[in-house]
Image (cartoon, rainbow, N blue to C red):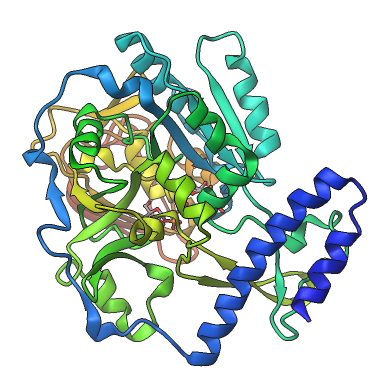
Length: 472
Ligand code: UPG
């Protein structure tokens, strides 16, 4: 029934070229859907007892890589940012990459700065590629048009658009190939392989002599091009390298590398059943985390997509649309591709290469004095004693970027902060300094205004505090 409906959608497109492209997309979607049905029928879930820590050969330590200052391989490199996602979880409309992070610059602007700096420093022309989705394309183009006159080569392509599935009938939601956008979705960043191939960008890069692709999340400002890893990619003849990092308690939304029956695989939080969630979150069983900084051989992508051997784990995402309509969307993660590539392995990198901004608590860190900006890269303040990041938990009142902004007159000084928890209706005056462990709790109906220039060191503040000056 699904196939018939997809054919109907395809046949409704008159333009031959557009129909062909749409058909390819629907074929790929159908394959994913079939795999979903098979897994559902067989009840095949991950066998938790077979989930093991990766072996030392599967993960190499970054500090053991030979240092390399030679930029010789840069002309074979292209850099790609995964830019199909929206900023919805941070209360923003539009692409996540359009959020202003520092000095009025968005994630996109900062990423462009990083590549411009790299290109100038080594006198190369590494292309900067954005994988957009139908959700992010328009706004992204608006932001990057100002770089039209710059020397940087920015390429964009759109990832696939798959139909959402009615949870009850298991039929596609859309009735027409165009129209209501809420019935379609971008199927996760695992779509990179197929959409690079379908869009023609893969062939174009290979024709231009590019051999390696450095992929990362657009929200990770620590993902700068690293010559040591590039050289390692060449030396180890690896088709796929995943940068992992020591897991901290803040690392939950994401995935880890595991050994599963002798092969190295990605395990995403979305694949973990509730009874194993505590295990997944703990840093005992899973000591590393996927940064999603990936180095992939372009010809290998071509091989894998052409041989149609891709079978990335299906991630099922259930959503409720208007009128309580339950839909499912089938997604995949790019890191799951690791199992298809030769000599694939992880490299355990320093935390500085992983600065994800998934929430306003993360935004709090990257806007603070903990970092300074160097050519689009955030560098940690050398005055911080240990180069670790404080654990910050801002409550629901801070969840949206707009609320977050209005609650701080200026970013607090946090060089000596270890732990901050804030809940309830709390605001911060300008120049506040936070040290050690600080907990601020405004109970329901009360409000706490932290006065300007106050110092809070190992303090618990609760109750109701308003218009109090020089309180501390
Ligand atoms: N994105 C796309 N297309 C999509 C969905 C997302 O381009 O269809 C982009 C998104 O814009 C962002 C990036 O992909 O730049 C990552 O997406 P996000 O939802 O923020 O991260 P997760 O998918 O939850 O996790 C990824 C990896 C996980 C890793 C984590 C590190 O799958 O293994 O631990 O990134 O932040």
